[in-house]
Structures are given as structure tokens and as C-alpha cells.
Length: 141
Image (cartoon, rainbow, N blue to C red):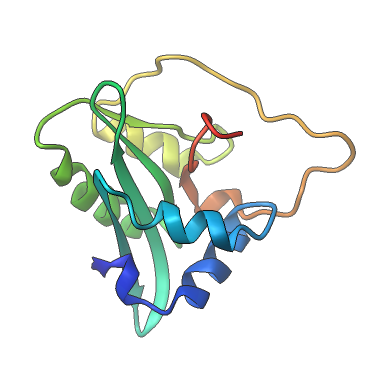
């Protein structure tokens, strides 16, 4: 694991694009440099295997995004990010279609606070939800 900012940004942006339905380089470059938090990346055999960020919120900390190749990488990133919360409450917005993400949340004792539904007109965009263990944010749309 290492700070996300130490990786070439184009690698992070390409990984993000697999998990989010639009390119968002400007947003992502700022989001991965939080003033009150951290952004961490994981590599396996020289390839980017996932990344995540944690930021202070009104109460506690929110992890998001949490994007990973598999549950082992997601777990490693989650633990590293959660360690930055100093024992405060952690929030993670998990996509229900990803059973490994639900299992990760359950493993660490996270309980539902509220539910939302993602809806689209037309076909849903092609994103790899099995790599999405935590969405970036609901607050910004």
C-alpha cells in the first residue's frame, strides 16, 4: 500500500473509469488529495489493484471510493483507511449488487443507516460493480 498521489494519475483515472460511469479527472485529482483524510492505493505485481480514500465528515469519517480488484485488496485498503479514523465512527456506502462488499461491511460491524437506489433512464452504464466496495459519495450526486 502507498499514498495514491505517488502513482501516475492516469493509472488512477483509468481504474476509476472502470468503476464510475464517466471520466472525472478534475474531480478525482482533488478528491484523492483530501485536506482531512487520506487516499491509498494497492498494487499487485506492478499493476494497480485498487484505491480508496477516507475523509472527515460531520460525524466521524467516510470511506469512499473503495475500489478494488477483489475482496482481499478491498479488505487491506479498508483496514488501512479505517486506521486513519482514530477510533471514530466510519461510514461506507456499499453497493448492494456486490456481495463481497456487503460481506466486508458486515465483517467490520458496519450496520445500515439508510438506503438509496441508483436509477437510470435507458440502460445502466457499463461499470464493474464487483470492484466497487464503497461508492465515492452520495452528497455530490
